[in-house]
Length: 449
Ligand SMILES: [Mn+2]
Image (cartoon, rainbow, N blue to C red; front, side):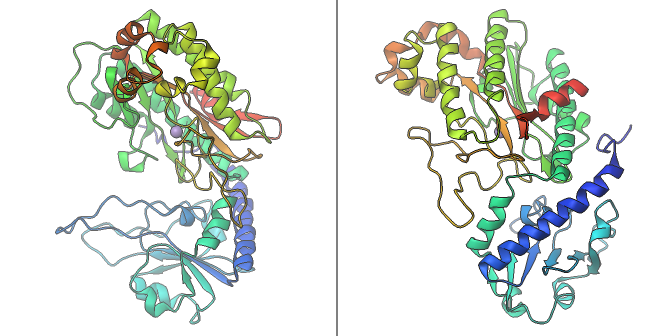
């Protein structure tokens, strides 16, 4: 089987990575200067032991480390950066015969680092300058740090400066995000075929993983694979192994990672119900209308509020609400069916950092009142990558609450009853803001798959 993770144009990443690293060095130097440090020491993370056992939890690398190097499985490693000098990678290579020790990395990015292996933390410390009194440390609060003499551990002000800058992606990062979307789209196509063939949730996940060529722990998040009513649970995690008596619908929110960068893709499918398929079609058109508004200078909160206005029209047209669209928005009836935010920043983490920051120096941009789960309130800029994920769900708890309050008379309850078995609809694409407007990474990926 061909390696589905291979990038078609590996050589082009070489040049892109060089300018990406230059940009990371430049912005890190500015952040260090603004916060009064002379150097930065970033930890990849630690293997966490399971209580009373010698096993460990699957390793998840810290994002501030992988912004430097696409090393996803190197616990106990460090990047040391002093402005004006080539960054040092202290690469943890334990002397171990229980596990396969990692080989020294080789790839498009390794030539830009001074790479030195180290057996343990003491050896890593010996690779660093003796005096770390003005070095800021990012990572786990290792007990050893007390004797290392670093200036500050995880200083919030420096973290804020670094996080703020991560929203706008470099051309290298966009290339990685595109590839993550292609892998995710491949997984989705295989999952859809499994659904059409009558598979269980678990079997659908296996089809997805095989097509992406990634283990669950390699994915940017655990797949949400919900048949029928399960689609009403926003982060449904059950992964039922038996096949249901009937397949009505599939809501699949699953994606892949490439070089540490995430995609985040949701699709909803109807098995053979034309009415529900038509409702999915309406939501898809609404999602595309929202996507068309993505460009530099747009306040993301406006897009979120616009989503509620458009959803109100869909609900009215589909005879799920009985009142006028404006009234459905004004009375928060739309929030019964769409309780989450319209999207979030995407990058090294699936819900990427810095979504509320007004500036690197301080101050957050508040969410609109009545919308407590929106994860992004910033104004879009070129290079931002966001998700666009409107939904329409039949969530028992929220429906029960609405039946008991002022919204009860505005909802067509018999229509809701007939739709409950489908769970819900979510359609989610990843969009990069460009000079001309935006690039839809997800739709492009499905087209080229
Ligand atoms: Mn998402």
